[in-house]
Length: 490
Image 1 (cartoon, rainbow, N blue to C red):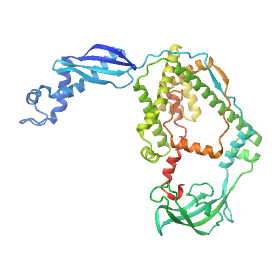
Image 2: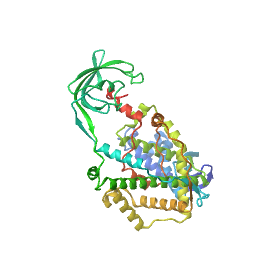
Image 3: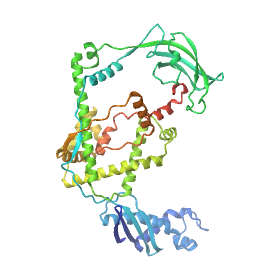
Image 4: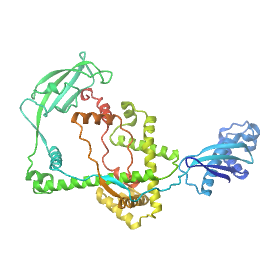
């Protein structure tokens, strides 16, 4: 093998012209013969026993050329890449030049390579940084979540009202016949939760344990086709009515739900935790805003292969999120009407931003001669083990030392940018939407959920975060899942 030329072209690509000589090609032809001979029938010979010269005499000297090229190419290409000290970032496109003979062949390989990166300004930047405030209402909201988790349902001998939970048997009938998915037994339904079709829960307000009631329901026009717009009857039997028993917010409650003896101490701890959470959120937002500027300031001819690979990584992460929620990707795509090609197209812009971010990070690490010691890596392993309540050796099974080292280098690079930056007062956000508008906006976002973006954190950070609970599925995906029981969809 010899490299006849190596030419740089646009989009950080190189064109290698590589010659495979007679000795290398002869060795490849022999390998092709050994691979293919069992599939070639030659009269007078058992399968696989015909000599190579006999086969070439019958079918021509070129009979093994195509397979031999496939065998010779990878080794020749890899040797050329190594010789030219290229950092390839994608698969090459290959074109044969001239004729292929027993003396060998010449091919051109066009391959994307890691781009040359020139850092712009990365020190002395400025970005908005919000002021962290925690109000009494914030603490009360966190307390309410605690009380909700510790609220019990107790049976009551009275008529059901909104907010109560009724335990029911139900069965739906269309034109007098039961329909699939319309039956449930000992089902606990909170009235006012809007988990069943409109009109179902409303008609159960006022029932008591032991009651039986027929509910006249008309399915919405946008329901799935078998029942859309159809009038049905649900026969319901009420077994029990339960109300919420909310614990009193006092010192006894604090003792029950925490390590504190008084409600005052519990509130103080909640305020401290909320403050720490918001400070971390503000800190990360400030860092991300700065690193976005750094990424915008670099000069680099980014190859398409890097952007495509990052888009595909976003999509793979998205599939993994769905799997963690028990949703099948194909079913989700069908339910939401999404198209994978469009998802990848939509991911292209954020993918380019992420690639530029990664390039900027690597350039800072190189410029500042940043590294991480073995002691720092070990300390980071221990920190993660403590954070996730895991054994140190177990953490090391999930993460390689080089991943953690990359994470630490990235953290140090971010610190270089942040330590020289100036925080400016963040502009006031516009007034919050009304509850109705907020719900509508949330629904729109849910229907357009895309593969998630990365942050400026590196791979080791992501690997750690995978152990956390995944985000909730979009409303459309949830709605599709609920279609298995028609009564439970809106």
